[in-house]
Every structure is written in C-alpha cells, then in structure tokens.
Image: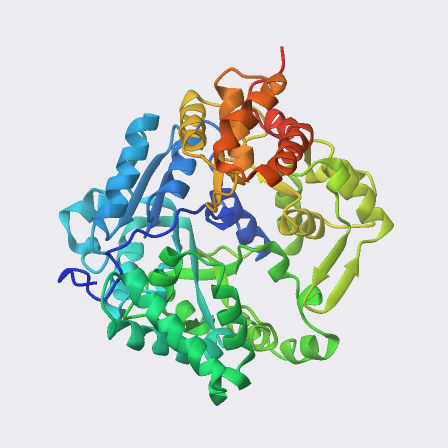
Length: 503
C-alpha cells in the first residue's frame, strides 16, 4: 500500500472476482415493487444505460452487458489494475456495449469523463460505500444527483450497523497491526489477523465477549487473501446505519424502496410477534428499518433506491408483480418448501406448495401461478418466497434467443476454469434473465464445453481435461458431480437458452 495515489484504499492487490444477483436490474425492479414503488422496466428491445460504481475486475458489469446487447454499460473503478483486467476480458469476448473507466469518484461528477457518461436507468455499487472516504461518498452522491434519470433504480450494498458494531474493533486491530508490518496488503492483513487470533487465545475480553468477533475470526480461515485485504486494510473502512445512508441518498433525490433480498421485506419471516408490535408503532420506514436491524444480525444490507419514488397501492403493486414471469433455476426434485428464517422454520401452506411445484417445472407468469390456487396466496408472497429462496428468478424477457455476445463471454469465462476447486463465484450471461445466472465453476466449465460443440456424451473427456487438478482419491467424486450436474443443471441452461438445445 505504498502507492501515493491510493488515498487509503487497497490498490496493490486486485479484488476477488464475483457476481452478485442483487445488482441485476430486474432484481432492483422487484425490490421497488415489493416496496410499493412504481418501476419502469425497459421493454425487450429498448435501450437503457446501466452504471456500476466500484466495478472491480468487471465480471458483473460484463454479464449485464452481454445479457443486454442493446444497452450501454459503463463500469468505473479507481484501481487501474482492475480496469486493465476488465478491458482485457471485454476485448477477448468482443463485448462492444461496455466501457470501463478508471476514475476517482470524489471528482467524477465534475469531470469531463463524468459529463460524457449517459444518464443512467440503473446504478449499482456493491460494498463500495463502506470502504471509501467521506469525500468519495460525497462524490458518489453528486454523481447520482447528476447522472440518474427520474425513476432510475439504484442498488447499494454496505456493511451495516448495528450488526457490525462488534466487528469495528477487530477491523481496527487488524488494520493497525497490518500497517506496522511490511509487504503487500495481503501480507499485512495476515499479520493483523495473526494478532487478532493471539488476542483471542490470550482471552482478551473483547474477543471472548463479542460473538460476532468470534464468528468473524472463525470464518476468516477459509476466506481469500484478496477479500481480507480489501475488507480490513482500507483506512476509511466504515459501516453505516441505514438511516444515515438514506439521508445521504436524499441529497440526490433518491428514496429508499426496499431490500434487494426479497425475504427481508417480509417482517413476519424475520421478527417475533413482540418485535413486530414494536416496529408497528411507527409508520416511518426509516424507523421501522432501524428496529428491524436492531432485532436481526444483518451485517450486509442490499438496498434499492428510486430517483423520485412514485408510491402505489397494494392493488396496483400486486397487478404489476402478477405480470412478471418466473423462471426456475433449480430442478424440480430440489424444490424446498420449508424456509429457515430468523424466527425459526416456516412450512409453506398446501396451496403455496402447489404453486411452487408448478413454478419449478417451467417458466410461468405470477398470474398463471396464482390461478392454480385462487384466494389462497398473493403475488408478493409467491415471488418473495420463490426468488428469496433462490429457486426461481424473475425473467427480464419471457422469450428470445441468446445473443452471440453472451455465448462469447460464457465461453471465455468457462475457458478460465482450470480446476473444480476454483473458488471464484461467477455467472453465465443470460438474455432472458437480463443478467447472469449464478454458476459454480463446474457448471461454468460444462457450459463452456457445450458451447464449444461437445455433448453430454463427452462427459468422460471433460473429466480427463480436469484430471491434472484432481487428487486421485477425489476422481470418482468429481465424476459423480459432473454427471449429476449434466442431469440436473444442464436442462435449466437449455431452458434459459444459455447452451444449445439437443439436436
């Protein structure tokens, strides 16, 4: 972290690659509707502009661009190494509707570069708010004020208080100890973590009394050095209360709508009866969220804001949700009708089970699903449960062919999978979803082979390709995983047009 231009941000080691479905435009739109806000989704052939602030190496932005070739995607990051990697991926996949920009967000709104960015329909920033200086946060708000159209949807995720209260001292200890160690940021993070573990071993009161600190230290063992460096070694690391972010976004005329995690919008699944009674004393959504956050352990919020929210009643909300199309992303045999939620276990009613069973058998509108059991469910419940449990996704387009640019990106990302143990969480571009389908490395690898012209009959050849990275005792396990993935997941890829149909 010796670069004079880093301004306290980790720049000497690239951030991990990742894909987060909450950044998808259709997920933002769903959040808006669940928050009783009118949303304007682009029609299948419409043009739109999507902007990502703090894009890292650009995986999410590339998936959005390849899934929506008529859109303009602009992705911005402060770290030139991130932009270089992202540009290389875009160039190799020949994704022509995306532009990666190296820029300081503190100054972007007032710069010629910022002025040239089109007015955005969608903006997303994942984690950025918690890691940057007050000057950068102010610059972000200025940019949003100038570069979002009326009705635009903005997604922002951040480390949230009060859940992170117990982790503030841990971050400071790791940071201060790391800054006194030598080497690159990952080495400094290692040094800081070592001190934290030693303090726990020595029964330092903070480490014995804070359950969050103990959980963080336990979970850190399996995390990548890149993630730990960026999470713990930024000098401006700062979790935030929802109310403070709401106040900041208001300066850009942005109104909070709802959570991009659907189940978080249903208090009956999150809070006890006594807790809901306390929350229901207030109609102010900011106060209600503060009470909710005080009752939950929610360290990361995924919030959606709207530029000039148009509030709608329940009937208009339900009608809009009913027009949405759900598409399954798990096979029918994996359907789960029991929810594990903060207040315990929730078993779905027989009527909702029937609806869920139909939903995972093929694309259907919410209206069609509700018609199976009239009077026994409602549109928000159906979409909230099925999308919130990651068993279905809302389709941005109900039909249509997969564009060539999506196929090229999927082949490129698949070609980078050299081991089934690859820890990168990525996605497969999908025009029907208008975003990526979350995909573990093995599914990405198989999709790449099918896009290259192979068929399922080549499964043993795929195993041979991966054999050098597989321990001998794990070979049969990997063979089983490949065949199970082919049987259960490839049909979903075909339904979504991500891989070719069988001839």
